[in-house]
Length: 336
Image (cartoon, rainbow, N blue to C red; front, side):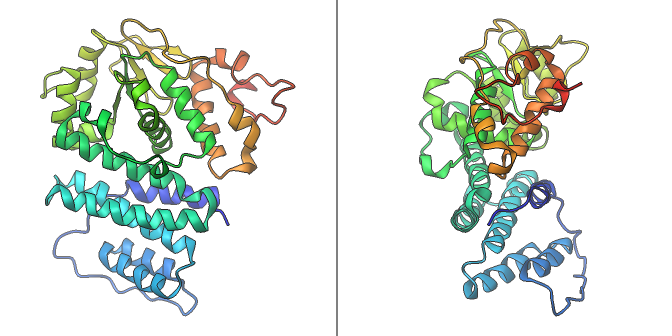
């Protein structure tokens, strides 16, 4: 059984809803109908800011119904969201607290993956991304080159592994690659962590964390060689004077009109030495799988759609239909 795309988008939306409940607010009692599921009840508790109660409820449900894949998945999103909120709240507590939440999330998503085919895979990769981020905050970007994470902890679906390879390959080896959406981040980080020895000088940057996580900002400003007091657009101007700078399709142009961006394969790029690092991009897995073959194919297609809107040359190369890929999903930007 697979989650539908609408359910996935809802869950991805949950991951970005990080505002805690107001202090001293009394919990709201919501009526629960007799037909409500455990997920419905947990959702009601989450809307009231009662994250721990929601997780405890699902834990009790799963102790009696261990094969409910959707409940495992939902429980994993609660723990992952709390780990992400931990960053926003200024690391309130030791690093182990964030790491412990990620361990809970990883266990839940692993179980969900077993029960829901590829629905839980990307969320396991997001857990790996968060673990790598804590490593950066603790020991700096360079420490990721010997960061211990098993390949099985990064089970990227083939369509997203291909997308990650295409995005990484669009940026020069010494570049800074800024990721936008969570699908892009999962694809890029998952692929880079699996192949990082092949891209030791490429730096991946999370703009959201640079904005509001002081510990992450200190480490990445040090890595980029920019003054700590500069906001991200100004910091990137400094970066682009010395090394290539690339934006994934979901990232809007930054630092305009100071920087001049141009499309390079799937990314927008600026700075010196703009020669892509990888071979020619491929959409073989997307064409092979099609939109119906994986719950993540449509999400990958949407990223390619954004890339084609910024680089119409892709319509004559990467997204051109041929006898070898007759099932290539339509890219709307290339039909205009």
